[in-house]
Length: 453
View (tube, rainbow, N blue to C red):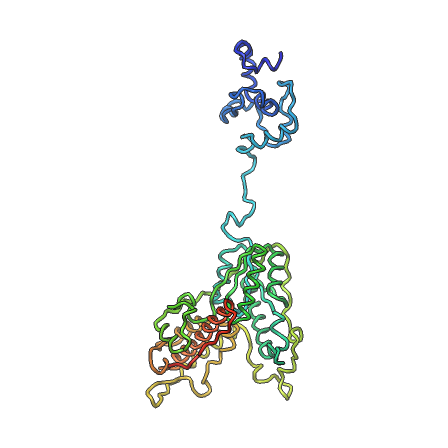
């Protein structure tokens, strides 16, 4: 029988062939849709209902792979499909889009979980695991985290004036702080990758190696550090990576200030008056367990450099008698910082208050004239907020960072310490204000940093 008469649409030919069409509800349509789509009537091009297909599973097998379609019974048609028609009808075939053997899975697991596949935490002057907002954010938003510290060669060597940009004592303290940070990260299931190189180069290379999607870091305040952030932003933008910055170097958060940074008072007295009564944010507890390292890339942690590696003379830290100098007795690191802080708070609580002639009291005197914690604050081994919290826990005295007293808030030794932390905030905010202004203006800007009123 001529296949063209079988499906010509002529009423006289359709009726005699009604019984044969019942045995070919699918295969003729499938085969003809592959090759005769241009000559069939419209009602034959409509796909059959899915339910019809499953009513007779013993007669029709639904193909699940492209190769099986070539085995369809084309004997019902005298016109074999061409290669071009075969390809064009497969993508439009509803059977191929609705029926699959295996469940669909997202191509990227991070898309399903709502997490980044991998992220980098760039440690700078925040060498700690406690009260570290960017570390916690990366942990919460990523499936894996790579912690990185870069010894930037531009921070070492001689300045234009002939002095060391970073002296041997500070470098030794930094090396110890980085080593302590690595131990703390390892204790929590992570590690610290250490490199000597420019961050804008090192971070991009590591991001490519592990497939990182974002870099997390704390913002800094000086002109050179802000310029470094701009370089990082530029290279990461070219690579399609996001850079997320956080603030964690001051007692008061920059977003909590009751004024815009460009409108900050240029003298300490005006600054203290405006922040009086401002609430200090709560510290962020250190995580007991951190996300693991990215599986991709197999990045080596790297060795922590020595003074010689940084171009410094180790003998410079030794005294004339061959023993370490007094300055070398300061050991860097978060653990040392927390121990000193707790010891200082306990000593302040145990010491009797000494009344001054003007009626104020001061418990920081004698050998304990200072907390001696500034180096750890500078490296970020200790945060001002954690220091504030620890002193509150260790004493029953009232602590107020921005006291309204005319004496500058030095009612007690601990209040005096908070007063000093507030001075530190002032200098960091004022530096940030004018370093940002330099980025946006070619004219030099100066600030009058007057004494407290």
